[in-house]
Length: 224
Image 1: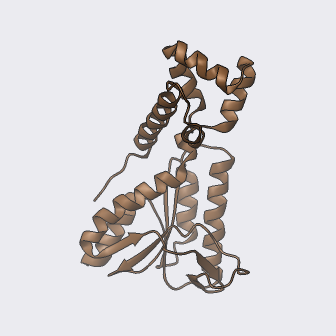
Image 2: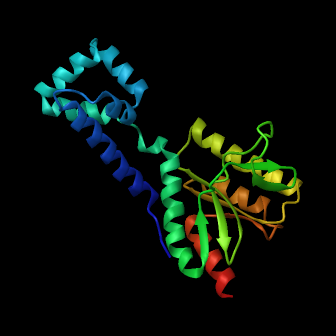
Image 3: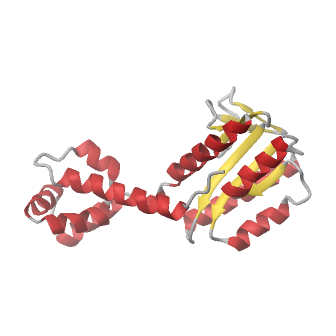
């Protein structure tokens, strides 16, 4: 079973993001596409306003002062905490590495999935509204779907993630959804997590689990 330290993943990714920006700023000719893919554009704009300079002038200062460049890079690089999709993909990949040995596969859907009355299916009609948060399909000895979120700390982004989870749970209950639907949530908010768990306690096919308990659930289902 794979046990993942989410906070450490984010620290490592932040360090990597900072390094990408720093290395770009220390080149004589800034690879603009690369740097803009790696920075927090709002943070860059605010920094340029604070320093009363443009990107070219900032670049020149970075070339002249390495320590200054390190500080700038840490301020304007993308925040790992805002890259939840990267966290989710990593978690699902690590889970699949374990469960595939049990002939249970947890993989990203190959196509968009629609939520249509009582079922989740491949999107066929553009007009149908659908959830984009079906993050994985379970196949093999077990089948079903996974909604995956990493919710650490507080703020509007975290609140929206909880609302999205609650909304999808309400749909599953109201539509009497029969297949396995796993709400895979790693969080430091135990209160909200417990509330979600209690809301599905009467349903055998709908589960609110962490990445650890999800792997345990699969192992128990397959082995027992």
